[in-house]
Image 1: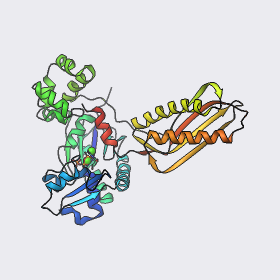
Image 2: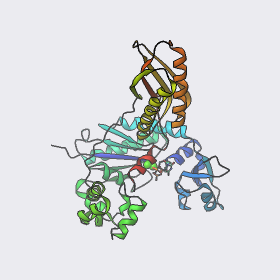
Image 3: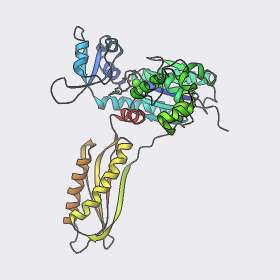
Image 4: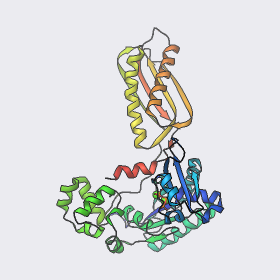
Length: 369
Ligand code: DCP
Ligand code: CA
Ligand code: CA
């Protein structure tokens, strides 16, 4: 029998902006706007995030920097370029603290994680609450960062709970409270209900999660398809069995193929190699991994193998670079191997992964609309 799970969701408060405040405490009492400059002209680009003071002026993630400047034109505000290295380091430190409190741990993006604490709390919500307070205290002491926490019987409820009170919030929803907790909330609080879906649901007369929970399932399926329809129905009813799952970071992604015919013709080799590139690149994108090292391998007719690799200083996320480098490396391999031996098999591998900076964004985009 499945135990009554106790799941904690942690979301760091105004994360990038809070990292900047931590590095420079004098920022704390003014609006702070973290910007991602597009490089195409001064002030072009989008707001990454802002502290809560800036949000009072209407500054939000994703709006143009110019718009944020207009909103804050009469105020002493700080506009800062994003410093991803800092945020990734702080994130890693906090994630390591969180891991030590979990039976099972799942990081989501740079500033969120789920902790299954069912066993260590003996299914007790009171113990989970103490644990959550300890977590907040330790992160504040060691990393000087506030995080908000939700506790619930599954990931769905825990995540919505974590967003209810910020900063340094702690919201606990027990199984028997799920229905009354979810019922009045707007539908867009549900993961996967983005702008478009919200509009469609409003047209169908569904504004709250409670209304969605009671809505005819068949009609939902007709409107959104089977998978989404059933998902919306279950989610609105607070049902979510998805486990807290460690997302192990792969060491490398590679593929090796046998050629139709043995050959030393570069173009023929590349035709196969580029297929592999497309394939492993797609997998890296799915996992949101950027890579630093590209390796190629040839297995010759005598079954001897030789390989060549190139490592970049900064993580790469471009398919073009992957293909270009692959070509260079196979050219070199052909030069280095004995001319009388044709190639039988070839492989391409990427490694040296780091998480793409928009990890979280990709995940939300994937389930939205
Ligand atoms: N982020 C981004 N672009 C977006 C959304 C987010 O660059 N469109 C980055 C900056 C955020 C971080 O991801 O600091 C985490 O995103 P959240 O949505 O959790 O937002 P915040 O942590 O900034 O604020 P909150 O306190 O509301 O969680
Ligand atoms: Ca956050
Ligand atoms: Ca977040």
